[in-house]
Length: 232
Image (cartoon, rainbow, N blue to C red; front, side, top):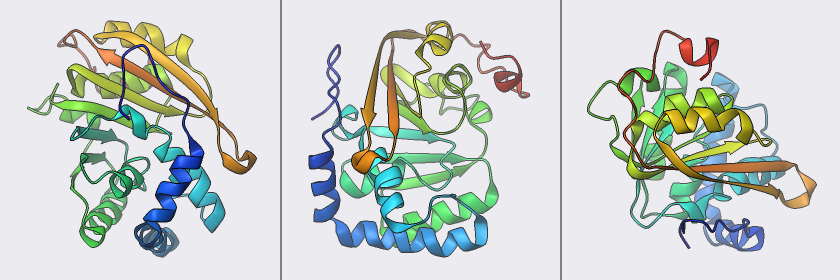
């Protein structure tokens, strides 16, 4: 199931957990890599197995329905590879460009892509700089999880989304009000927000989805830290 304008379904965690079980060997291999590299690079504070499977894997797959068949997706601030790596483990049709500015995290991502045989490339750089390259308005969708507040995040992500594409933000709580002005300024049109409960009462999360309907004005992103210091 993919994104249909005006209708975003609540994540079906019974189906998501069944998907993980079907590919358990692949998810276990990723978990083993995460544990190994987390001891060296401190990638995530969540490392106990059940919590990783719910708070990282299930949460990453909560947005799986939003990505149409064969999409080329950019992930901003990839970190330990959430939601991108679980999405690729579940959806081999998806192709990702993983954007991360921290060298040690890029090393982990490159290792995971190679060892898990993922359809992805890693770009070690800042989203605001990459948006000034031919990658600008190049991607079918751009996603991010736990990177920045929504208005800041929109300025990092929206310039990379092609017209007609999607900006997908995985958030801990609703930030729709603080993000709407930024999304509109950056070329966004209709938006959807969906709240959901993770399995085993492990928390409430929100997906924020915006469709790109106009080109992003050339002055954005502003760079030099303005996205965080003075959000739109």
